[in-house]
Image 1 (tube, helix red, strand yellow):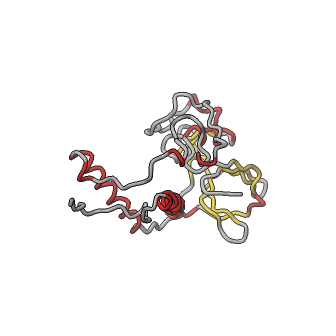
Image 2 (spheres, one colour):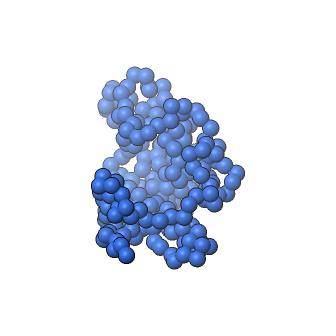
Image 3 (cartoon, rainbow, N blue to C red):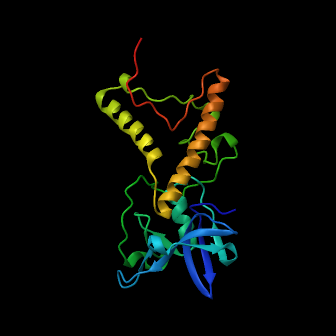
Length: 226
């Protein structure tokens, strides 16, 4: 029912709190990073609490729960926080109340963002779309080509450099041992996605009679040409 990335309102001792779920704990508890009001911009800025203030709460305290799908676009995240009464800044940490949006300055969002925040993000009924909308951006699994690692030896210098750096980053991520809860939640999420991708890739390749490959083990050395 609850997943990392979902946003909630929870009440403890008649006090209302707002936060994001980081993961699932033991004994029917969820790990939450809550928002707190700061003194910035005359008290209109809210931010997530520091690492050591994150805590596990009993699900019975949750009074409102908004689920955010894996890999949801920013527009869906913004919509979810608005339902809680907040506008998220572009840094993923800073927020303001909906009513204060025109009187504060929030960090800008550096990623790509849809020009129409109200566009239809309704998930497709096609199971091969994996919950994405039929907007033409994502193609169904059964229509895509089989996964293959990019071969830098077949690319121009700039593209080859990007591929090698990306492959190295994947290997470095595997060695990364996060120490805080946010880092642990991020790594767990990525590993979960990698497991799904590996299973899907293996199934596609096996249907074509090809060997299994691990999506998290891209080649680092140059390939030998025959």
